[in-house]
Length: 110
Length: 115
Image (cartoon, one colour):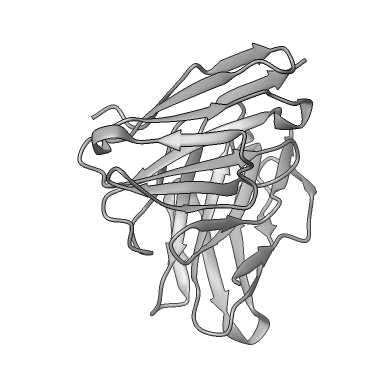
């Protein structure tokens, strides 16, 4: 079965600093991968997705992710974090249903 | 189109009581999913519908859980004889056709607390 692992439970970053969240997938073929963000009291919002083709994917809110088959990774990045980026971030893989990682909580300090 | 809506947003109940949640998907979306999210975890798949047909139920969905989607529109998730372990956020999502490239749009969730 397909699965994803998010190794970091919690990350603290200063406002204006760069952010990278790690995601490792387990699947033999090319997976369909997603990053979602969940803010307190809000539903899950799709940031970006990867199906095939260009391995660098641009998303909303200034986020990007890079698919690396050699490392079985799909890491999320943002060059300069804003206080509003404080949230929980989930990596997910899909066959017909989504399978999520455990999430990474991002805290932004002033 | 106001997105996926869920009601109620919060439900507090006593152990042993029955509860029912409702999900209204985006209109014309054929696929509807239910997920459960416990504290500190990512959402876990419970079940899904293609129109009115329930096509799969996770092993997480015990006999006390039942879901319906009459007429392929809104869906309900009922939990009978609730237990404290049922306390979680219950999320509903819908997609247009259900293909893996179809974005699943999530509702805000129903937070259940079982006392």
